[in-house]
Length: 83
Image (cartoon, rainbow, N blue to C red; front, side, top):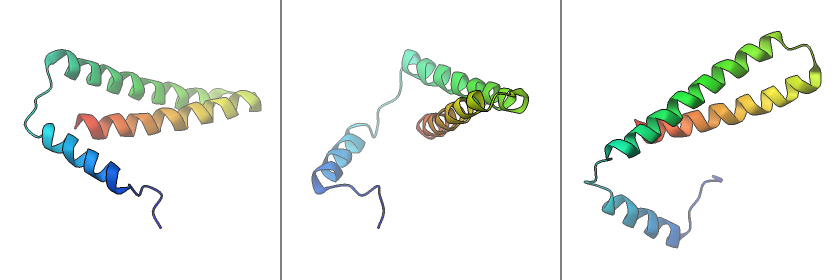
């Protein structure tokens, strides 16, 4: 069973949102905000990957792994929404 199952109400609301947004274009500030988040998240992913390669403290390494996982997840979500 999938963990991303939606109730009938959620499906209805998502359908209404999709229908409403079908012909809507993003304005410049909305697109700029999405692109800024995309660039920031991609930068953080690179920085965290670099620090994981050079860090010696195991406790710090755990925090960096957690931060990298969150950053990559957010990056993929933003990438999917942007493109």
